[in-house]
Length: 379
Image (cartoon, rainbow, N blue to C red; front, side):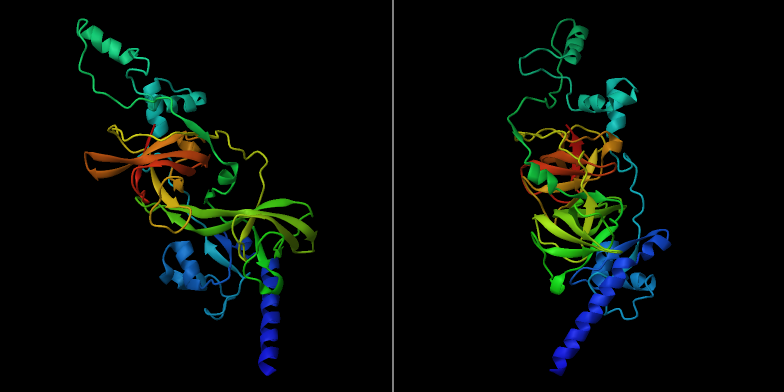
């Protein structure tokens, strides 16, 4: 009986701490920091691994959070201060130069036609499917006095079978964010660890009933595999939630749809009605091709889970976005640099969602497994 009473007291104390976490926002008082909400199963070492990519740096988090008097005693729903990710490297800083090269080949500096210039890069001068001679080849023939010159064959953009992107796949694709969301689940009924459709939870903000949110999880920070730059937080989409009751400092939400189980420490972001799939057509399978010489346009920096390799129909995240002229629907050849002059095509991906410095993409073709750090060339 005594053990039961002690257990009940521990639950009460834990819930009290959750309530305190829900109404405090220490990050707002510390520039350069943001609030990380402790999840079930978290330790300072695990959090350090998500924040720094190194579990041994947990003492840095402990130092910035004097309210934690025992490193072994943190509870789901507690808020901790963690450093804000540094600004991502500017587009082209990783050797891409996609937008610049597109502008040079188009022979124009008109900023309003950036998307059109980007597409010019993907269609080199060559014979078309109908056998018509491209402008570049005609010029070469004229210079040779009417005799066909030996022009190297370059990859040609051909019409291929297409399919539509599954809207559910797009909604669940996730993205890389430069900071953590502000609203989080800080408590669940009966200390429930896993939450699914129609389950209730408490969030750390007073919100009007009926407001709908996308439910997400901040998995870990993503560090560039080539430069080591901090790109931000990998955000996974878990489902949707709706506010059912508003309190003075907290609100109750109900989970409406679920792609994966949620828990205390997961976040809510407003649903953007304008966030639609601008280009929902997927190209058919590509064939191995020559990778033209020149700087890479991008790098695969992460997968949507902790796997070591990915393949066809898997989601990946790349280190270029709208700042480099990338838009949804844009395709890239995935390749591996074997030697200074040796490039082997691995497959193809297509952008589903474009952020400013990073994008979410789907591998549409793979000849063998794809790994983080593989390079991209615009098609």
